[in-house]
Length: 119
Image (cartoon, rainbow, N blue to C red; front, side):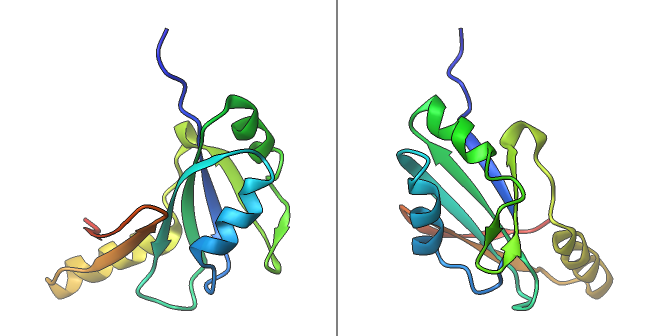
């Protein structure tokens, strides 16, 4: 039997969301192991994040927060196996293709910060 994936995807986060807010919100579910927060080049776009938990019950509890109001917006909390690409990433990809230049996003994590290219 494999190791279960205990990561949720969180969509429709407020553009002003920070890692500490996410950590506090999801820590009530159980131990948060890691958070990856996507940052869009457009500061007005909703953001998305991946939140990984240590315990299966924490993962299950987080899924119950689907539709909850967080920082003034209803958020979607989905199991990672149903990964949904935020719509603004498609817009950035189209922008990159039409202008023939690289568009980069930044992913902030609880452990480290890294830059990623959006293809």
